[in-house]
Length: 320
Length: 265
Image (tube, rainbow over all chains, first blue to last red; front, side, top):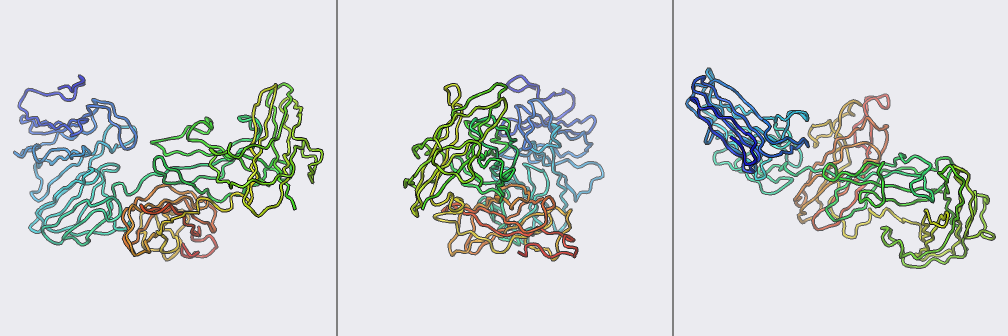
């Protein structure tokens, strides 16, 4: 099978197999399940159908396998299809409920949350998957897996009671600590009819009912990057670009949150601006500043300093 | 009464050939600095005189005999220093005078320096500290540190070991009787102690509500002692506001004892 650009995305075999597949809603990923009735095993593969940029910045070319599982033997008639197989609406996670393998307890279910944006390492195309082991018992009939509107979180909500669990699907594919006001809390579901809903970003942005806390922090977008402003000192002369002194005298760096199109004064750490050689060296210096918001808006290196480049600025000072 | 203002300026020759620089000091229009981002007063400073000295020859510079223009002969790779001296009348009014030093070689202006004389002394205060409508978000208690990943709401009883990875904790609160929206907390610096820059998009902070903002800190990379951190807070209805807070960087054994709790001053 090929995508619209001719890239092979999956190979089908005409033997005794069942094939199931699912495109991610954004069309950039294709998941394929193959169940072989001869060998009684099943396997799954996720491939990119377009260039894919992960959270860690790695670009995965189209046609690359990012997730693979199996072959696993299963005699179960349960198919990895339908409700057991699908993408989150935001395309951040593939949900796969395993058919039981021989010897598996009837009280255990395994569900994989494969997260294409979370790499195994920065040198591998393979992504991480969160493996949920769901225990059922007379007291616990199971777990509902719900997804946040932005697709960055999965909530494992026990039924009817038990501990609430959050999973980060964007950066770690791992447990996301549950916090309220940024303090860790343990949330228990204590009654049937519980609900969980995203009401806002940030602090207490997830609203809960019939649980031990009425609200918890919404970790999506709670913590963001900063603009970094770095200033250096350079001996000033009348001829720009011919400073006889090195420019790596660094008064310091500061971080700030500056909105697009806005400006903000930033304060640098205290620094004593002394004359390099008291009594003999010049009093007149320049402060060179560089600001960026890497990796989205990274500044050129200091070696490419230019007052016409928007990431740089220069102001002069006299030290007496 | 008058005041002498002096600025030393290097005049380098970065070539292997001899050069002659014509260095000239002229008073210029302050509006030329309109794009420089300086908040200068509108008043005009009374300038009594100005001139240039070569190689810092006068320890008590007088303006008599100091010309506004000098011819500076430079050997290959030689740097000489020109001192610009500007004499202004004392005043209590906010005023400014702007001068330009130009460096002309072979008929071409190859560089220069702007000199801004300001009364009162510039800047009178850290400009960023002045918010007309400051955010009321404030710190509920002193800054302290916890082990990385620990509950930021529990202050350690004893100082942590030097090799312990730490998080700086700032408990921000809304002391008003009205809710604040889109609250943001940013750690600007910790007085030179390295930290991981990140911004907390706290969101809504109801009246009396608090949030334990944290930042990973490389405390062991800085000398023990007292530092002052700068935290910037803002919300949807107020200007960004800077909060200065002391921070004591100490570890178990720094003073030969078992150590004291963080955040004690």
